[in-house]
Structures are given as structure tokens and as C-alpha cells.
Length: 87
Image (cartoon, rainbow, N blue to C red; front, side):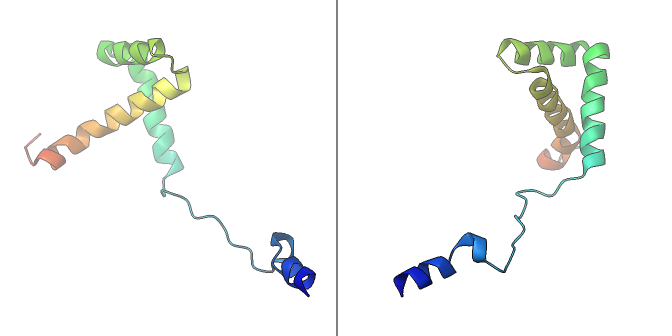
């Protein structure tokens, strides 16, 4: 009887499939736009280039450094909202 009960709870025998819930909901076009903006900023903005070089010297790969730069650039428009100060 124990073998019958144990096999009925096997994941393979489960009839219900549950999709994993993502931790955050994001927009791929928005992510791509932020990534491309960061990539262009490396070439044109000295501060962004310095930030990217600093992340690279910390040991991050190019893609990781670009994502960090994109995140930093996306925080700029939200700073006035957070501090309730005019831009």
C-alpha cells in the first residue's frame, strides 16, 4: 500500500501543470531600449564611459556592466519623483 501511495505523488504522475510565476513583470522592448541607450552612452558620454570602465575593472563582463549602466541611467528620471523635487 505504501508503494502505491508513494508512486501516486510522483511529479511525473501529476496531472496538473503549474507555470512558474516570474519574480517581476517586464517589457522586453523597454529593456532593449535601455540597453541600447546605455550602449550609445558609452561612446558619447564621458561619465557613462567612466562608469562602464569602472565596472569592467571590478571584474564584471561587458554585458553586466551595460546592464548596470542602463539601471543607473533609468534611475535618473525617477530621482525627482522619489525626492519630490522639481527636475
